[in-house]
Image: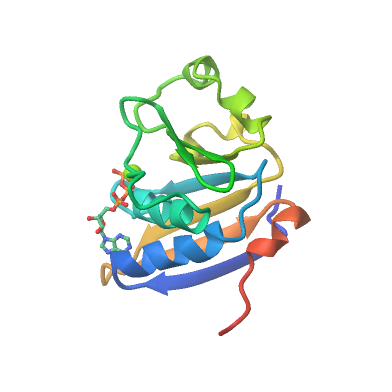
Length: 157
Ligand SMILES: Nc1ncnc2c1ncn2[C@@H]1O[C@H](COP(=O)(O)OP(=O)(O)OP(=O)(O)O)[C@@H](O)[C@H]1O
Ligand SMILES: [Mg+2]
């Protein structure tokens, strides 16, 4: 399926990736699914930290990669469920942690390494893809796979 809308932005430091996450997190609504993709160290967790802040998660609710816990829950405007599929090998492991059930809640689901299990991602989603450029900056691209996600697209300041 082709994305309906695509937007991208270059960030030269982690704070800028985080700031972009805040702006997008402010637009999130209960029931959204955000699939984060990008190589090791691309800045996915940094983006999620900003996204959580934008969604109203307090600063003392520390956002870190749920590598061992597999999912962390933070409380913003509604719960925010943060997954990391990096260590998962088989899609049944993702099912076992209840990923699909989380998608049916009044929470927001955000998953790092989401592209490892494309068959488990809802057709309607926002996809955020971060690429490390030759200069070490990050090219952050986000794509709406449903018009519902059109609200994530930013107007020029
Ligand atoms: N423009 C940038 N945007 C985001 N992170 C950056 C940027 N420049 C440097 N970094 C650094 O990249 C490192 C990796 O960031 P982060 O942990 O968010 O990546 P990740 O994609 O979640 O990694 P992993 O694949 O291990 O989950 C951090 O130390 C961060 O500060
Ligand atoms: Mg990470």
